[in-house]
Image 1: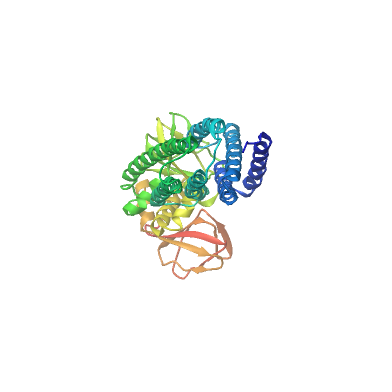
Image 2: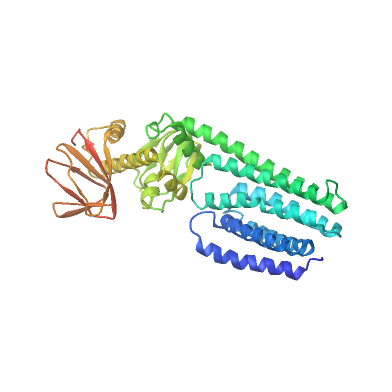
Length: 428
């Protein structure tokens, strides 16, 4: 029943090989965290298979695989300390260090490993599958509502309670060996650590969601959303702070995030010093690059100490595909910034201030134009090409482009998908 050091090293080696293979197949953010969850799911399958071979075999396989997996995890945490989510670093460092102490305790005391211990351990260990699957999906960019997180929490807790019950039924309600007491106490300790971190994270997330939704509900961009839509925006946000003068977004960089200003003030400014917009709490920036994949068209610099709510592309695009109101709101914001940039560069005669342009945008008709699809604006409409391209009078115009139109004129989509906005007066 002894654990071979060579076998532990073999598990670490296998984890590193699988790490390289899985990471190569993933894209986007949090690849290390997601790889950890995928490897943990594989380990759960190994534990279940080993259980069928009896308590002795299960005990050896379980401790060998878990010890090797945790050594691999700690190596990854050290290797990528600065790129990992802070919550991931803190929780898994505490979790793994506690586990290493328990490994030593078990190795020194486990002279007996009963069927009850094996049954309880395999049920308890596989309870993490709920959390691993949820986190792998969430970090992979899929939008997951908060109620799913609550269900996962209780599924995990209920399965662990069942592990204790099943183990005690097998031993007739009274443990016979000290090892059975030790493993139960160890499980309670790990339960306590896991539950404390999860409840703490949930409370912090709820507070952040409430703050952000209260901030956003009266802004022009989000005021059309119901409370459920606002909550979903809040659930996507990661908070970050900047000091006065720091660059939040840099012109020319590829953008895969947008943000909402939570506290403080910032300025959107071109490299030549032209000020495009002053940002206050509730304003958003970065959505143009996030939606189009284009480079940042301006710097955003903190005027004061600023706290922002950062939103990643993958989860945001997953959400707006499910929420028509949010899809409409964000594309209108994109259109407003496009019009602002276009006005600065080429069409300064638009007789509206910033507030007037935003109101004009809100009244417009947002259209997704497929390639070769024809559109005929009404007389007096102004058409703003937000993304993609259109063909007009045998000429192809790429976004951003602005067309005062007249009755009978036609425009044809000239990209796989183009987003256009039909604006009704004033005609610039």
